Length: 215
Image 1: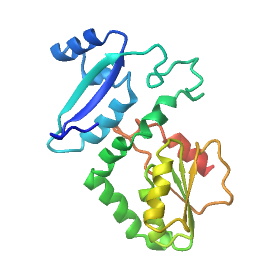
Image 2: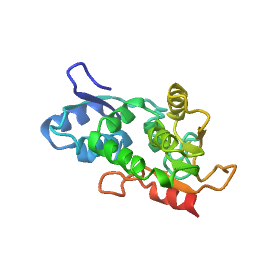
Image 3: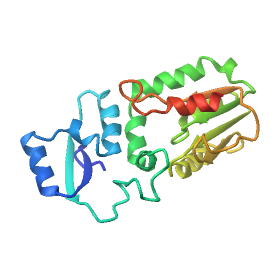
């Protein structure tokens, strides 16, 4: 969540919220420690490292419920077989995408790469792996792609469909909700695009999905 004063508020569930809050206050627990427990911290760090000045992050600690879907468990049917149930859940939060879309140098680089190479997309079939809000897919459509299959495993796929329709590109951009490993496209694609890079380059672990899509 984003507060009125521009700070980002991260709510963390814990068995011992008082001790966690105390650890954050006295420095014995850091954001670096938290990131191993909550995928949203990974996403915050990834985006905020590129922002100047760094915005304020406030952590709220709450008591973990007995069946807290946000924290996940190996035996929880809501967890994906590859252990990334929490990963996809975190990307279903629109505020995560808001953070990434506000990173102007990052977004401008992707936009320019597509706009300055329109000949690579003209009349081509394009696959966007992990489309998120669909912005790269829509840029490809505007660059002249015949069709763009925008694949997204999280619930943000619904928002992507709305944005595509709002931009009147639903005739070209086809949003498909599901993991790229599990879906079958109706045709072979000419071009694959993906925003697969996390902080330290490899954090998000999406490169494997891009390679599977390629092969």
